[in-house]
Image (cartoon, rainbow, N blue to C red; front, top):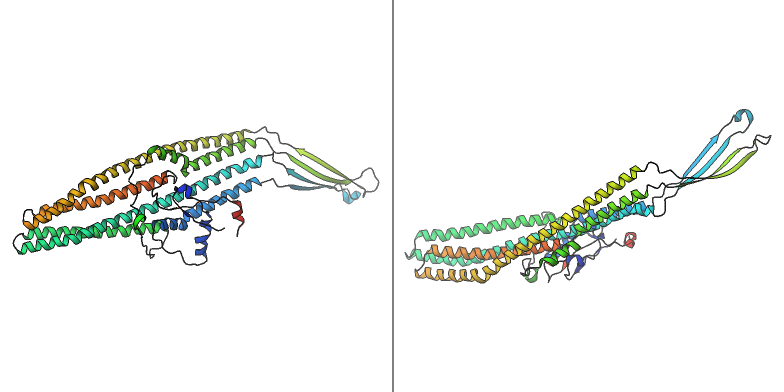
Amino acid sequence: MPFVLLDMQSGGMRRAICAGVALCLWGVFVSRAHGEESPESPETPVEYEAFALKQSDDLKAIYARWQARRAEARAERSSWPQPKINYRTFIDGWWLEGNRATHRAHLAQTFPWPGVLDKAAQPARRRAEAMRHRFQARALEIVLEVRRHLIEVARLESTRSILREQLELYEDVIANVRTSVEADQADYGDLLRVNTTRETIEDELDQLRAERRQTIAELRDVLELSPDVELTFDFEGERDPLDVPEAQPEREPLVEAARRHHPDLAVTRAEASAHRARAEYARARRLPWPTVMLGVRSMPDRMRLSGYDRRTALFASVTLPVPIFGQQYKRKEQQFEHRREAVRTERRDTKNALSSQIERALSRIDEKRRRLRRYREELLPLADDATEQMLQNIETGERTVTDYLLSFEQQLELETNLVDFRAAIARERARLEELTGGEFEAYPNRETPTIEIRDVAEEEREP
């Protein structure tokens, strides 16, 4: 049962799904069972996503349940009633009058009506289909989990880079203030304030390092890796998880894609079909199955004088139960129809929930992108100019250190906010890809690795 994981050019996650789920029971899992070394640690975002899909025990379990449903369908389809062999003997005083034993044997077989066994297998087939869609839904969730953690790692690293860069520039400010104190152009209060600001930045860097370690620990859990595995990240160029288009997606195509392709809706559709199939099978069972019996009977020939003379006769019979007590089947049919209606109601609720989540994601993207553009094009250039001018005015004594620190802190906050806005947009786009069943592309210029159960009967016979 070989597997293939294809990294195809992004055309939507669902369209890229083309590898076999045998991956879950073979490949990585078989190599573990034979004691082989685990695959190398990933580096790029695409490698992390593919690695998580390969490692997922959830996908392995769903695959096993899918196989169980398929086996159940095959079992129902072939569940003919077993034939019955019956033997009876009648003994009539043979110890007094000779051999008076009567022997009787017959073979009975119950025959299902045409098409009934197909109806019996349909519920399991529909449940197997639902399990296949659950596999797709879980694969989408795993990719989303990995992307969220990678976006957070990228956000923390970008923020740390900004703080370290500003801290290096800030050392020159501290040196200038120290020189001014020695020349009596500034007091020790100014020196205390600039040193306190530097320590504040150092504390923020320590906090970011701690948050990064925590995020990486959570990512290891998603990847199902041991704590001693060191993770490295390659976020250069287009691999940067924060590098996403800033254009506002359109709502209607997203809602339409979600309603047509989201696996959760396909699951409820398949479950509703399963309940309908069970109701149809209950209706079909209201007509009892006939039983055909063929037998032979051997008995003494009482017309002859010898007790050893016997007669042999063949006989046949057909039994057809009378469907008088059929309320039980009617009740079962009603039971499954009610369950089907409940699932259909859940499906409508899921549709509405998907639309609401898409609406909220688009609202957050729009808010973040507008603030991002305003901060980047208007506020940050002003803050840069103001901070540089404040630094020059400190050297000439026209401005105080307090004025510079206020401007510096505002500039630093604007720069870190830009990173936060980009991360928020990236998270919402990743969420939109999951909500649309992979139809929306969070990263249009990047590959998207995914897997699906390959429903090919020949694969099951391969070693």
